[in-house]
Length: 157
Image 1: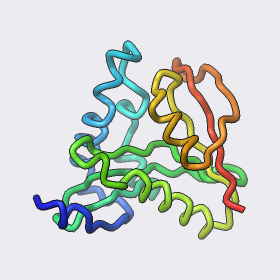
Image 2 (image 1 turned 90 degrees about the vertical axis):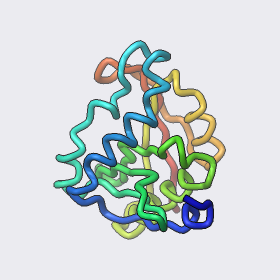
Image 3 (image 1 turned 45 degrees about the vertical axis):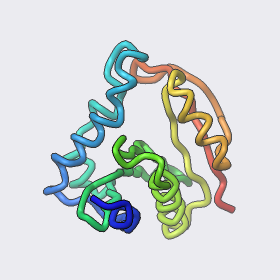
Image 4 (image 1 turned 90 degrees about the horizontal axis):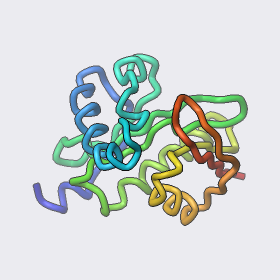
């Protein structure tokens, strides 16, 4: 696939027929963390069929038709939670992660929400650095569902 085709993309709601591609993407994106965490990261255990059916999942599709990234968005009280954001390793470094974060911001604004939230594992330090570079602030650290998580927020006002 040429880089030109890969740079053309759209973010759209996920469809049931995207499930296999989503699960493959998530497994590829999080596989490097299995050894570091000593177990599968939470996103590898999620029910993506359920997220798709609930309208909570969006995919980033390239101009060539490949699913290169995904977002799982959950509406909270006064905020939108990015429950998962992932880019296929073969497509990393092309700005797709930034595009997905912007899509989440756009969706929050569309819903009249002024805050985004997300969390990552404390050992996923590269994620923490990325979020801080993009205007996110750390709000807390705590154990949840057997994982040591770092929570972030971003004000959209």
